Image (tube, rainbow, N blue to C red; front, side):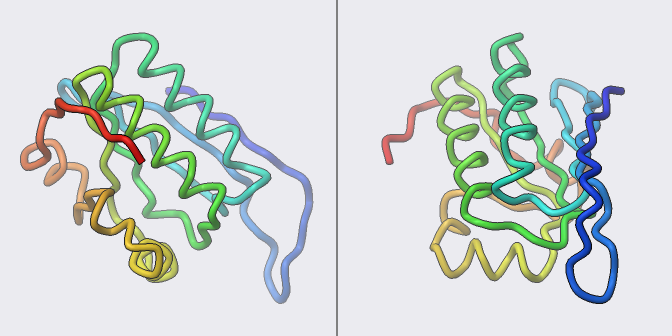
Length: 138
């Protein structure tokens, strides 16, 4: 399992933000990216690198587990949309697992909840998510 973290010592408000990290693992034919920390303009390049690297390796079925992500901004959303596009162009897909309240609100406000499929658990995503195919053009 690979993990990459960003420990910049930032303190936002009353509590220190946990360092950003991405851990990669396999679940059957799926690659699971366990994301931890705020997914924002500073950390999104790390997630983008992991998604693009995995797809280039031929792992075109990607699950992004957001259970430990409390904050998502437009840069993080853009990474997931671009990852979905790249995965679909390789006959795969990218889905989200366990988005928190703030993440769900962000997806709903931008209507991206209609584009990015979400699942309550990795197990549900592995068993229920479509295997991919097709292309997207937005």
